[in-house]
Image (tube, rainbow, N blue to C red; front, side, top):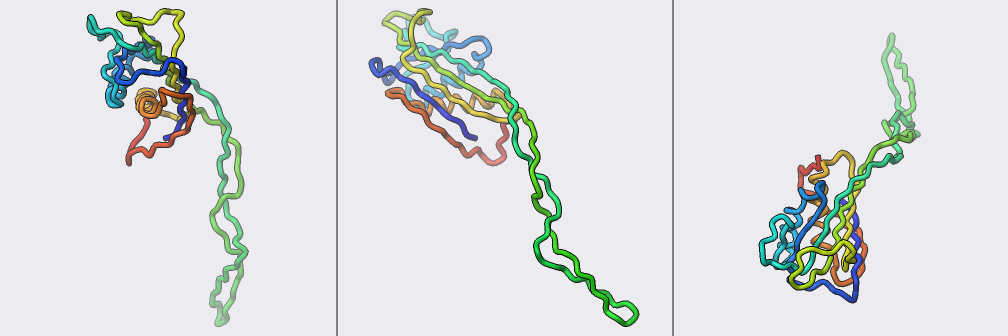
Length: 199
């Protein structure tokens, strides 16, 4: 599976290492917060809590707002058309008839691509976005007008996949690959385990 990841960072407010995070999302995206929490802990962050589980008297360093979107689009691709193609050689078929041998030559052919036809297919574009907001001491929620200091966007395009599996994959890639200290953009390609299916 492949995709891309983009990080936009504020160089004047670098993300502090070993931070405590509170994770927030709209209703459609809340299902992915546990995956995100585990990914942050694996990367080495001190703690990460979905907002609903934030303990009393724990004051996070950052609020990370997560959004997951799926957009479908129709793309046109070329589908091969197969048929018999002359190889340039000849094949002889010989038979004995009434004491004489009779031979017939015919062109040698193979089954191969003889052309292409345009086909329309639907693909889904999956986008996961994380916006980081710094929290002051004693603060547990970012204000509505506050600007983020880091934005991470991970994307992939797939056909016929379960969104839950795709977003779990994107969360893992986004958390493992983002660069908190600088702007960056890169493509990634991951070899999936044998027998893996996104369905």
